[in-house]
Image (cartoon, rainbow, N blue to C red; front, side):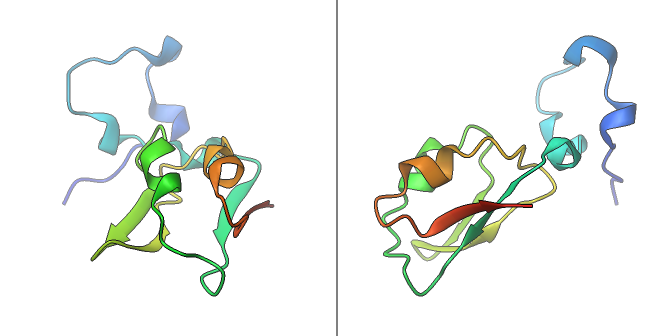
Length: 91
């Protein structure tokens, strides 16, 4: 099993040594705020999934089932794009 690297192990300057290695780096430690989904309000429009720059919105059977907090950098795009405002950025 591959152990993911924390932010201290990422090469200086964000150098990408080879293609397809993004999953190896646990970049979620960078965030101050994290997206929290109110599943009762969510209509599963998948706007958050489409606009997430890091593919951190987890979808199964066309429904939002979670957030990949190990890779989410807390940018807040998902919360700002949500038409029902069911995603809140929290500490």
